[in-house]
Length: 171
Image (cartoon, rainbow, N blue to C red; front, side, top):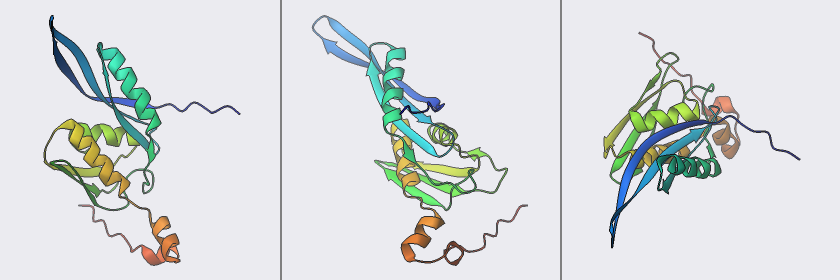
C-alpha cells in the first residue's frame, strides 16, 4: 500500500540568528519558522534549528509535515464564521469575507492563509506582532472554527436549521 505524494506549499515565515557563548567565543546557529500546507484545507507549522539556514528550513518543513491539521472552509475559499485566537501576548481576529476580497492579513498570518488555501479573509493582529506568536494564535483561532455540518450533526438537526441566510452586501 503506497501513499500518494501530495504537493505542499512551503512558506518561510521567519529566520533568527541565535548565538551561544562558549569558551572559544560565540557559536552561531539559525532558527527557522516554516508554515506548510496543501492549499486544500490542511496546514501545519514548525520551528527548526541548525548551524546552516538551509538545514534549519529543512528540519522545520519536515516537522511541519508531521503536524498537519485539517481546517474546515466554506466553499473552499473562506472561513465559516468569525473567530478570535490568543497565544501569549498576541491576539488575532479572523473574519470571513465575500468572494473577491482577497487575503487581507499581515506577514505571518498571510503565510498561514496562503498555505491553507484560503482566498478571502480579513484579519487583524492585536498586541504582539512576534511572528511565532502570530502563527500560533492564528492556529488557535483556525482550530476553533467549526463547520455547520459538524454543529448540525452534534445537535441532531439538518444543516439548513443551524445556518442562517448570509447577507453579505457588496458595495
